[in-house]
Amino acid sequence: MFTNSSHFAEGTERFQQYLLPDESILWTGRPLTRIVFHKSDWYAIPFSLLWGGFAIFWEYGVATDPQQGDQSVLTPSHTHFHFDNFMLLFGIPFVLAGLYIIFGRFFYTAWKKGRTFYAVTNKRVLVLNTAPNRKLVDAFFPALTSVSLATRSDGAGTVEFAPETDSMSWFGRGRRNNIQMDIDLGRLVFYDVDNVRDVYQLIQAQRARYSSAGDTVYRPR
Image 1 (tube, rainbow, N blue to C red):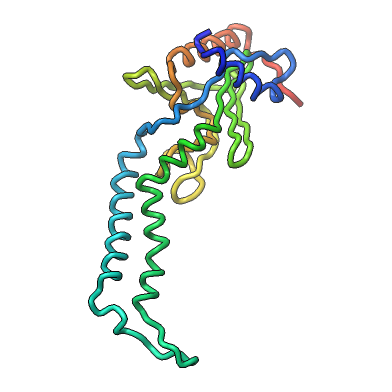
Image 2 (cartoon, rainbow, N blue to C red; image 1 turned 45 degrees about the vertical axis):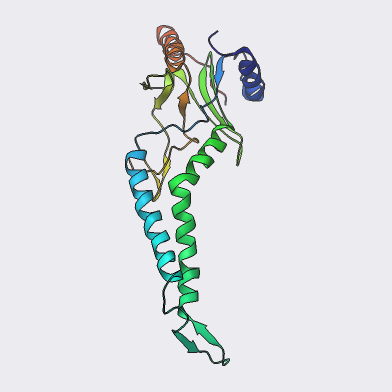
């Protein structure tokens, strides 16, 4: 078996409660938690720099305005309301959002990756997320119409399955071709797996086994 024995034991324990009768785990793994750039970063990074840069420039301009404090109005309660203070407060959410999409999202993704687990059994493929909410997605081998592989020079990569469910885009829920700021670890995808080619070959071998057996598989009622 090409998976680390300690990781395999941990992964087996994670998925044990979800196994079907006569189902056994062939491989378990988890995504690499280091920063890995994906296709979405080609537009996400420039957009985040533009957004964050403008928000920070806005806050800096308001904070260093030499006329700060001169523009105010008298409220009905006879207190002075300063527009500059309002503009400073108004810009804070945009600065925070900019900081998140510049680098904060990488830390959040790493945190979620550390709580994401993958498994290949003799019947199906599974993705388990344990935080912020526990979620399990799976697919039986006969239901997979295609399996795609993307590899990098270090041997790590991603395995995608089709058909796939909807994903959450930056602008709402939609298909995976919508604009996304980052990967969606809740999808039925093995993201950033080490020795990904071995995992891919194992999956294809199981698909071929079911294909030669006439696409028979246990399906729970």
